[in-house]
Length: 198
Image 1 (tube, rainbow, N blue to C red):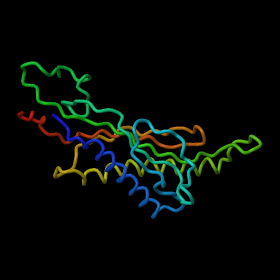
Image 2 (cartoon, rainbow, N blue to C red; image 1 turned 90 degrees about the horizontal axis):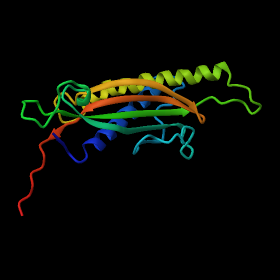
Image 3 (tube, rainbow, N blue to C red; image 1 turned 120 degrees about the vertical axis):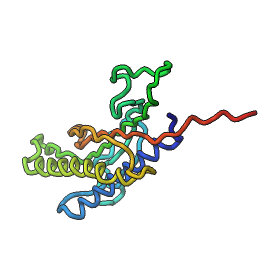
Image 4 (cartoon, rainbow, N blue to C red; image 1 turned 90 degrees about the vertical axis):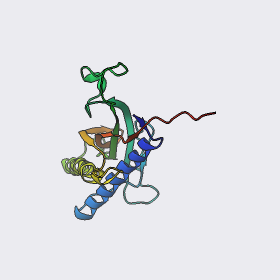
């Protein structure tokens, strides 16, 4: 099945909006939680780790929230890729149903990591514990955003079919630490466009 031209980009923007809104909701209820970074965007490919401490010209919330597309693939048994599912060869004369097109997105949220002191001493345990608390809140909030917001989006009555994949801590590296959350969505599709008559 074919996709509409903006299907992937529009969904990436939707995911970004869901996550950012949930981060701000968490900040309203949890003390000392920074909320959605002022730098939040859909990016082409894996994001560069160059803005985890960017205060955005005086804004209170630094960090970086990004969404990018890792891959799209056919899936007859969503979310399993067809190449991993047995007996799913297409193009022959058997009655194999048309596959779903799945899109895998990656949500990346970076914050400042505690750094050694100027004289080379490691970060204090208090600083590390505070950073771990933010990381754990980030992981939970991103996960909840996807579970609670995505069902209410899209044109389907029940929202898109989706699979929330693994979340893993990333870093610390280059002064950044954060979370990477994977999400796979069954994309809404349409029939292939017909050729125009001359």
